[in-house]
Length: 374
Image (cartoon, rainbow, N blue to C red; front, side, top):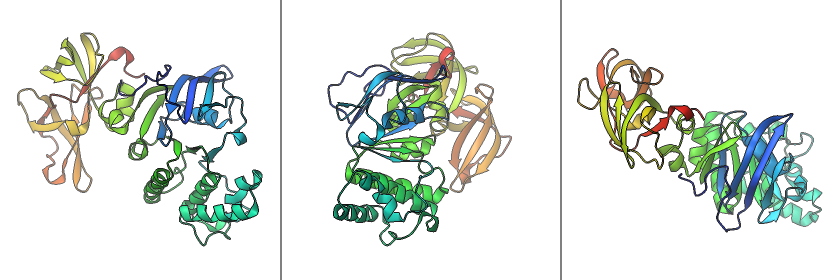
């Protein structure tokens, strides 16, 4: 496994983490939303919970925040048990998907709200609000109301309100989902810079894999109420441990294959009549038989048709993308009948061209069909 702890099993490290989740689970009306999870989040770490809708990531975030009560398990923040501690006493900053700003309050009043409820003296509150405004680059906006702000400015106010209380942990629930693409990218950069500058432990929820890859120190990929893999962005992208993770994170080409032999990480495969020898990164490999062969588009290379050791295919469509073209190939050995390859736009082959697909000797992975979609 690429992470230091296998997901959903108790970790063995002795370091006191910023957040520790020990066997926490949650069901709603008999339906399991979150299987028992064990997870340690390091101090100063930017950890992303990544997965499709309904996978349990927001449930887990709400359990950390204290908005939901766990059915089983315990939660710790900086080593302190907080399982029964109400949200306002957990010293957590939260940015919601819809920002949840008070429309009748000014920007400064919105930011100061958490300080007022904590009875912070007025002079200190004013100083901290000014600092927060400067941190999110909104100096001069203190007297405006939310309706006078753009979406990106409202997002900054919500972030400032979460940061001004100096939280032990910052929780972010898809905070960029309402922003357009360019603004979203700019805010991702700004948030990461602020988080790094403050050294603030951050838990970020998203279903956007590119967002997770670009911002995270580690990613916990979730599906069906379970953490399927935990690791750094390169771990998750380059060494996915399951069919689900490889498909959900990044583009993936999947081939139907027969595993003939295996020796350590070295495997002999038959892919559509083509014999391949590959060295995988996997610690555990399926038994000989029918398997799925996974390779990223950038690991596949187009050659002339009939080259030894290549998988036969035919160019179905070339999609111009500026500096490169996405070449979609009809391939009988592919799991869906199609694979995709990116090539320089000037080198895109014509539709109908017969080609071969060459795979590198190391890098691809194989998965057991029985657990392909778990």
